[in-house]
Length: 91
Image: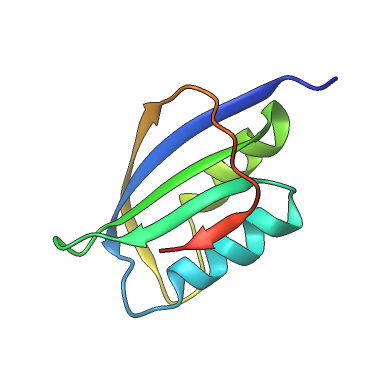
């Protein structure tokens, strides 16, 4: 059994209106990561992911860049406890 990890990310910069949430969903699904992504009222994007430890770490690294139209200014990491996510959703 692989070690599971869960982390939430608050991503700031030009991350709304550039396909960030859709790209996050595609990236997460390609890495067998579950969780969700949503836009925040302040213009940031909030992501909660859970999956195999290495996959989550690689996903977090990708979030620092995001899709080509995004300009990521910051990524705040918030540790979390494992939940029972069955898929990855855009909220």
